[in-house]
Length: 155
Image 1 (cartoon, rainbow, N blue to C red):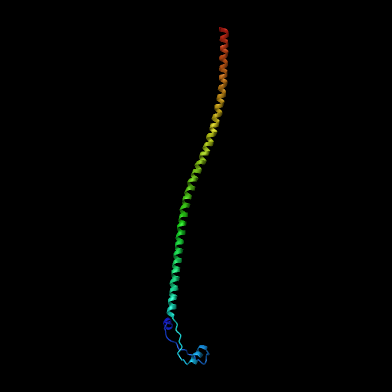
Image 2: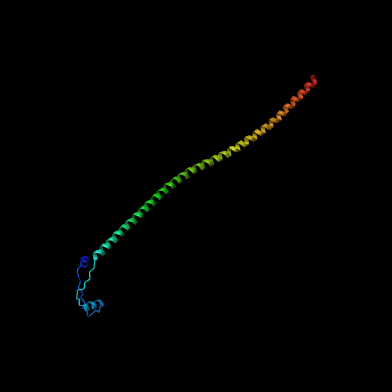
């Protein structure tokens, strides 16, 4: 209703008499003898159209901004999803590595036990060889004695 009231192209006569307000333009009109009705028109249609255009532009900008924010959120969501998958794979690898470390630790303990057992076996073998050496020397000595006796007494 207000729009209709102020957007009409009607002539609005000046309500103040020319004697109360001294205007140079009005004085010029009076001197030249032209007495026309003064009027002012406001073109509200162009202003309304401009306002609508601004609203459409603002709406388009808002839609573009919302779309950009939506795209950014989707990108962030996919990045977070990828990070979740990477962390799940990392947790799986850590679990597997933990099992391998346990196996390696167990194998190291077994190797240490086997090394100690091998050392004791080598010591036993060394003692046996040492004892056998003396036995061989004794046997060789006895054979030499018999050979000497045989050669001396039988020849």
